[in-house]
Length: 595
Image (cartoon, helix red, strand yellow):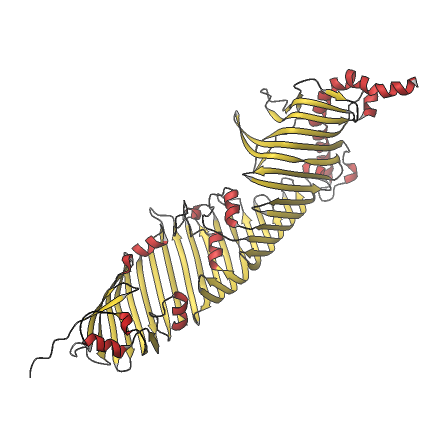
């Protein structure tokens, strides 16, 4: 009975005489850091043999200021009672309450200051020798087998050391590291709040020690948050020639929200839809390649290859993507935020991104839309480099014909410049008019339209208000909607101005139509606008300023083939008012002189 009682009481005796004095020393020998305790450990024997430590700090032995790498308000350590019987201290599980992990810049990452020694560091050094002996297939049986245990943490945070001050980056950090011994599988599970969003991370590997030693090992990674989620299953190599190779998935319900959360300098202010990417990922921290990539952008699925590089001064993305359907507006907003500037002003153009990234994408789509315009068999490129951004549709079928179009932004000069161009060849005027809302202005026959606009890239409205360029169009046989020519001639002969919509109930069959106009400072100067109908030729000239939408035109109607220098027109008139409500003011012809 006395022997049983002695055995029962020996852990208590050991704890007070041996364990309490050796806990800090054992923690230091295990971690490799200088360990300081704010008070003597409190030892509990029942129901479990454990020590509770207060105000614990772990610091680098070489740091004379003793700035903590890890500090915690309370640390609870489960101890081995059997080890205590012989005067040893062996940890099994450790729980950190309100810990702080301090990290510093380390290449492209932020990591805590590495310990100068300790059993864990010695295990990593030993593993390096094993990996160096056979990098392709290290002998896992020769790895050290130092016990590690399980570390739990709650209500923690991560701070970045900035001189004598710390910048808090992660809060409400909770989770655990489960790694029974260094030669076995390990797993990290954690949740925390980063930039106002809850983030959950699961990271595991069957050979974590090989990774720490600069070798290659399988890795499983999963991240979940409201702005984004991602997974990776594959191999990671952490040597000097680091690489990764595996299957990756990534998705964000809102690309705008993701860019704002990541605090990207090119975060757009307009609403952008979802993005999802999956495929094989190979590369390293500087350059990665997505092979057999499946990209879904705002519900538009595509496939191809993407090459992402961080090796230059700015990030770059290059590749080839093929879509079954593609919303060009979403694509432009996702890769080249042309539709909003600083502050999100309506219609503003953000050109700063042209200095902040490089882009070279080849695109194809069986079907595509640009607002209300539908296209098929689209081939396009999107390029951004050295302050210049270009979206070029080199070929597409639209409006019953073919279309080439482009947007060009130049951020290199004293002022940002924008250029818009479109060439629509052999199109159906009726389809073009319906798609662009210009049914009454576009003939229904087949024809060609060319538009070129250049101007300041402050906003789309300012571009139109100050643009220079040209417009030309040629159409064959068809109709001009919204004009009853006999009624127009009758009304014009009566004198007095009248609204064009008074004679708009009808259509005018034409044999051809031609338009030539120059644009200067947002004012369209019509040099020639002529329609040839059966028996009559109709022409217009004058000015159409963008600002105010006013009209200042003059027109005449002649008999077909008449010599306009000698033959009086059937009607002459001015066109005023606005685009939406034009008015006609007839010019009464003087009677011929008496014979």
